[in-house]
Amino acid sequence: MVQNGQLLENRWKSDFFNTAKEQKELTELKKQLDWLKEADSTALQNSLQDLGESFKKYYQKKKGKPKFKSKKNEVHSYTSKCNYSKSGPTIRIEKDRFMKIPKLGLVEFVSTQQVKGRILSATVSMNAAGKYFVSLLTEQEIEFVQPSLFQVGIDVGLKDFAVFSDGTKVKNPKWLRKLENKLVKAQQILSRRKYNSSNWNKQRKKVAKIHEKIVNARTD
Image (cartoon, rainbow, N blue to C red):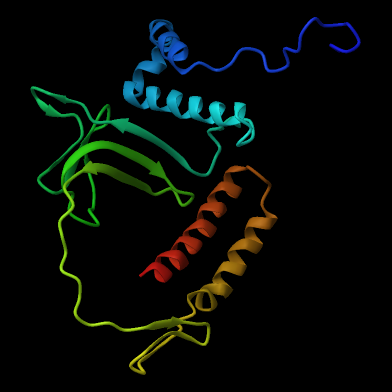
């Protein structure tokens, strides 16, 4: 259209996304929309920063244009920043059983490992199976670990899971084969359900749980 003389300049990209500008607009939007006050303020700011980084890579032609994230997506997550005040950090562990999260309060959780160092942020996510997880970003000093005096070579294969240089063999558990029949039946039922219906979503979670069980078994 520029070449044909219909436009003086090419404006197909419109205005560039400005993170700082959008964060200022967010403050004004909170006065108009009450539902924005329900979410943690740092989580909203982090979302805008992530969106700004996505648009920056798009403008630099490193990635495609950011896509709209629907509430129907299988995986959801948000990141909350830990602030420190007189009452203490906004994200903290209490009695090794409860975690204080902004806007959620005390949430009972099961810890996979001990939290060390100063907490910087927490990312709350929900997987396809409907389970919730919290990933903490901490700042700590790296401790020097004495290297082992013993060495062993490991060869990972298909017939045997692992073969050590000393001759020890570990059998392949083949977790997928053990749960394959259960997975096939669940997927067949899912294919018969109407897409995006309530029954389809229920069955989708059942399939996701089987996949999660296979992944967890392999990880263990």
